[in-house]
Image (cartoon, rainbow, N blue to C red; front, top):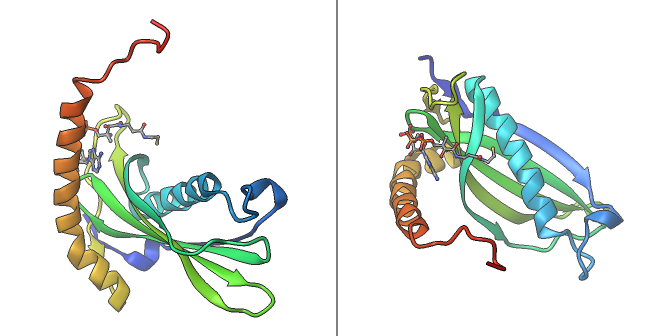
Amino acid sequence: MEAKYCKESRVVRTSRVFPNDVNSHNTLFGGRLMSDLDQVASISVLRHCRRDCVTASTDSVDFLHAIRPSDAVCFESYVTWAGKSSMEVFVKIIAEDLKSGERKMAATALLTFVALDQHKRPIPVPPVIPESEEERKLHETAPERARIRKKRRQKSKELAVYLTTNHPWD
Ligand SMILES: CC(C)(COP(=O)(O)OP(=O)(O)OC[C@H]1O[C@@H](n2cnc3c(N)ncnc32)[C@H](O)[C@@H]1OP(=O)(O)O)[C@@H](O)C(=O)NCCC(=O)NCCS
């Protein structure tokens, strides 16, 4: 399968912060940000493999700076690494003060998606070719993160055995 460059899956999206998007501190609501970053990441994986994909997990979303209504929210995402059927996507969110032009790293996230065939079974995806220093760093460190995720998934499965699915009122 032909490898793809990170730039082939790059998604860039810039949006405004409207009154419906803020929390009681008048900064961007975290849930809104997470929904938007899942959307941009999902476009990156589709650009990479051109197959149906599902979100398998999110490692973390690190909120580094609050985003204010006077900021533009700039999302950038791309596929950093691919396993057999899974793809790691990096998303960075930059807050741009629209009056001063100052740009701050507001949040970063790493998500994993899995490509599926028509029977909803995992299928192979193209490998990734990193080019820039940032892409190379993320690519090099990805196998170790994938290994940690495998362990975490196993632990979640073990824990699930003990969790109840009953209605809370039963
Ligand atoms: C994700 C999913 C497709 C995995 O299916 P599965 O039959 O258990 O697949 P496998 O165990 O063979 O794993 C397939 C790949 O996914 C990866 N994977 C599975 N679960 C993962 C997780 N939680 N985090 C990271 N990677 C995961 C595996 O490491 C494997 O990677 P590889 O092919 O690159 O080696 C399945 O669990 C699923 O459909 N989950 C629900 C997804 C969903 O509803 N998402 C929200 C809406 S899009």
